[in-house]
Image (cartoon, rainbow, N blue to C red):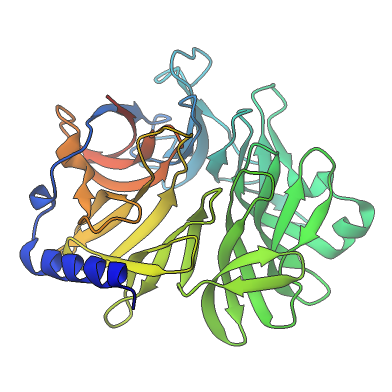
Length: 370
């Protein structure tokens, strides 16, 4: 273990002994303005993705006492959303389906996710892209070449970068396997990222920007679950259980094994060193996103959620590569009048989205640095 890793581990061990509530987290380096994004008309919502312009995507129940979620696209000042919330647009689902989920949005406001519909006589999920052009959800399978369409069913689109490359997972029909893919929206070219003989299944969760983007996710590698980087026909194991996000520098946010069957938030630097980020005194945590600020920015941050001693999750922020403890996001958001439960995405300019408890209801939120 490196000296830096030992410092991080020691700091986090002390934190887990002392912290029982997130209010004991370290003092903020900056504060945020909190915005409750509301719902599509139902009882709850959660944000999963955002871009630097402040467009937010996620899922929301669309009717009271309805268990189904619909994907949403939120834009400040918009007037074409649902009647009760004009800034939040309901993206719906495919014909014959019931639900959808939006996971990411790029700088072109292209949204990707998964939605159900009636396909081949049964309700099943399909990966989609949505653009604010009135065309509705576009099934990614309709963009494939005839040869790829005969071999693949793309079911989940997890991320999209500014090069218009989508990553996710689908069924590779000749092998009956769940495999990671990368699809170029401009050309329709599909890359099979899970073709290695070492893999029994694979899922891609994130793709970075940059001239040579990193693709990160998880795979069953020779019988063991591993966080990985994908390259065409090859994989690189990362020393984490799952890799949920990667930035243009190759730094990863994910999880490592915790006590028992739990998982704990982790950060992997570009040199391959892994730091266990600990919890707020509980048994589990997850690092969900890492940013890469422009040159001269205010530093890289990892966000996610961590349990306190009562096993209640709270959103955190952590300065990448530091020996600082996890910082409860609610402590740097004055006047929020909400408990921030999860942080799911941080953009390169520092916007953070997730879900909070507001008057005992789940609500998608947007945090803007002040």
